[in-house]
Image (cartoon, rainbow, N blue to C red):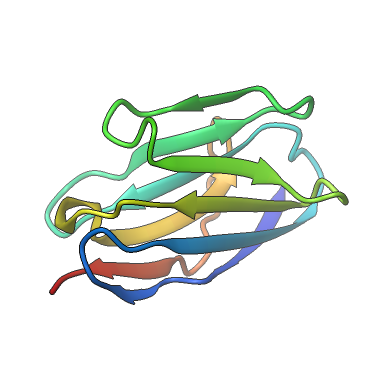
Length: 112
C-alpha cells in the first residue's frame, strides 16, 4: 500500500506553467502515475513513469507535460507547460495501476 501527498497546484493563466510534486511512502511504487479529475468527469491517467524512467502520456498532454522522478525514487513530479483551460482539474498521484487509496490531490485551475 502506497501513501501519497500531492502539492504544487494553483491558479495559472492559459499558457502558463506549474510543477506538481508527489511524495510517496510505503511499498510498491515502482510504477507511478499522475491522474486528474475534472468536474463532472471521470478520473483519467495523465502520465506514468516506471522504475527505470520509461514514460507514457495521454494524447491530450503529450508535448506539454513531463513526468519525472526525484533521486530518491519516491518523489514524482509533473511539469506542466502551455497550460490550457481544459487542464483544470484536481490532480492525483498514485501507483499505476492505481491502488484503492487516494491522496487529497492538488487543484489546478487554468483561467484568465
